[in-house]
Image (cartoon, rainbow, N blue to C red):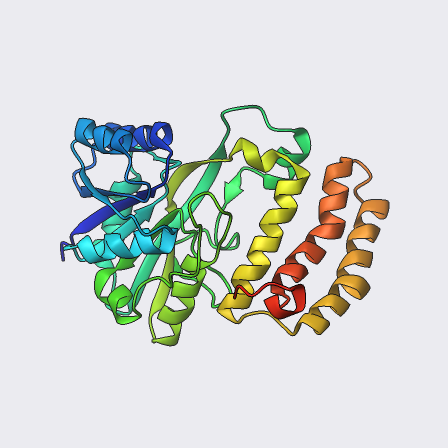
Length: 299
């Protein structure tokens, strides 16, 4: 059965990257409708959309989840593909995805793929070593099929059945990026609710994008902030253990474990990698601590 697909690209003040993303879709011969949701209401973004002849809408209420929900409201197709503005698609990416969408049984609510990193500037060796070549939701899966319950699709190439996403009320507005403010978890939260509603999440390893690894992530401080943000996201999703149990796990398991890995097996690690392995779990834990214990009234 031929299913219609909307490609939704949410963006915030990244016109150059958006143009590269749209150019990759054009070069791949995409025939699906493309909608850009501009979370900054930028004239430059509007002009880029005019040049590439794609639909444009401004969402002035700041937040990635709110922009994604605006795309959901505008969608008239059977499926909506959320594609990051800093991604580029390969020649057959959309074609492969369309084949999976057209043959998906009704219990499948979401289909996604994997991404490989690209860099605008040469990253430090420790970053490249740690980040690897990219990301897949389950390294053990080489064929199309349902994801295990503890695995999640990447939000960078996240295709959802419209009726299923509407059934779980879309994305929660308190999750995800807020303009340039680092925050995560909105797509994992949606997948949790889809699974609770009885739907299946599927992974298609042949569906691949190239995703920018930003220069701002090249510093140890930013890597630690990322882990803190992941801790906040998972606390809001309700998937973390008690903060006291989390602290004990950091102090008496994770810290000694990573220290032993470095001393026994990985003496070649750069000092930044060593510190990140040792203190990253503590930064994540601090994110899971309820705000009331940190003198912060934000949930």
